[in-house]
Amino acid sequence: MLTERSTLTQFLIEERRRHPGSSGELNSLILDVALACKAISRRIASGALTGVLGKAGAVNVQGEQQQKLDVVANDIFLRATEWGGELAGMASEELDEPYPIPPRYPRGKYLLTFDPLDGSSNIDVNVSVGSIFSILRAPVPGEAAETEDFLQPGTEQVAAGYAIYGPSTVLVLTVGTGVHAFTLDPNLGEFFLTRQDIKVPEATAEYAVNTSNRRFWEPAIRRYIDECLQGVSGPREKDFNMRWVASLVAEAHRILTRGGVFMYPWDSKDPEKEGRLRLLYEANPIAFVIEQAGGLATTGRERVLEVKPTGLHQRIGFIFGSREEVERIDRFHAEQTDEDDAGDQSYPLYGLRGLFRTIT
Ligand code: ZN
Image (cartoon, rainbow, N blue to C red; front, top):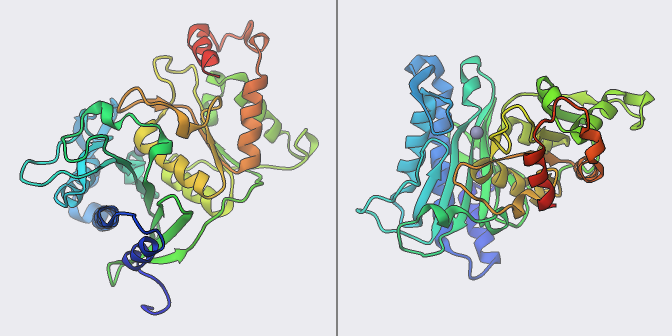
């Protein structure tokens, strides 16, 4: 086993040799993140045996019920990464404000954002959940990071990825040189390289969307899904399959493995929100991974990675996956006219939609 496959550590060291000038701190930070993912994987695997399932009794900054495991996973991430001297600050889905590095530890040149347990509302039903992370450069290395420091477009990410806790635990990583997957050997407690330079298939016949929101969608999304539903007898001239796990990491991993397109577009259900998923620690890291694997990620109006964030917990419409499908959905948004909306009871929010228009 040890001679056949690289460990994550070995992979990172060899990657660094190929890119002189890259920092050893980044490798240390990635290994600390990987340690956090291993620890979370163990806690999840024990499930009800250790009493970690169920609600924590608190509501997080997103207004979502915190699960006990959200709190546990968040603490694991903080403890695993705060001490090493690589970070100037962290931001988590579970924390209102950026987490300051405790004064007893040195501060470094990177920022870490993470969703410690994505899909945790499904944890009690034992489906795959995950952790998502993104690493940025701190604008002022060595100084305590402030909220504005985190508001960098996704193109600035140095590294990003996720761990999926499924039948096996897999860490998917990009440092901007392709996408690689490492499977956890639970006996050795090591991640081993199991898929190198992953590519998202360009064409697909599989989509993932929460169709219960159909009446709130924009015409472009309804047009796209309606055409898929018409199958061989419709304009697409092929039958599609639908998948919906309601776990972003699980959807991203499926698409990375066999292609597909995922949509959680902006809709008019909750007009205050620009989307459902969070830009800094969900959409950006997944978009970076997907683009590095040859896929595309869009809001419907612009490339996700080019969106200039305005808030730590900002939400965004998020569509990603196989290139051909994402390009088609982008085109449908561009072709969408005001007449499409006229007389449509579902779209009373011309103000917000007008706002989007000015962006394009
Ligand atoms: Zn999440």
